[in-house]
Length: 171
Image 1 (cartoon, one colour):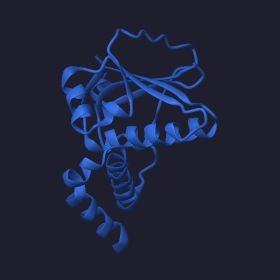
Image 2: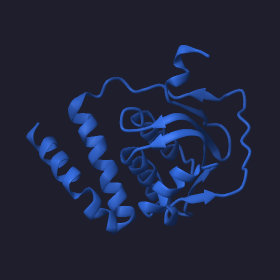
Image 3: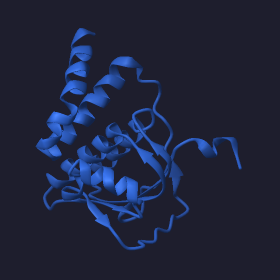
Image 4: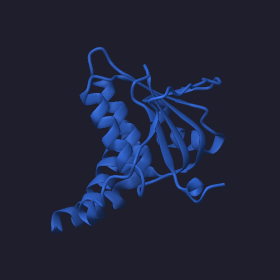
């Protein structure tokens, strides 16, 4: 087992259709900026179909889920609408998705969708240190996405968002 095996990794095949993303490890605020950048880049290039394999995802936090919600909302606005399919989602992760109402925004595949990575598959690398202000903006935007996806999330995250807005405005 390599030393990096405990580190979260997003393995992507940007040339597949749909674009494939496999997650290994914990998906959280500390490592999801590169995924947000990847979605932005791919959607900017006209990609509108994505599949994510969660079989190796050990846990997720609300910031990561907000990044997914933001990508799904952006894909929904496309004409024709794009799609973000989550497959092989474990019971606990499915519970988190449902608790935040994201099951109504994202497609969750209950089957055993098989993903084959081609020779062009690569691991996303973390973006350069964004600094405290950029990280606060990422977390704030992610939580705003969760509220946009399901307005009942406002009560769950209002304190976090107020704190982050204050922090972003002070800088």
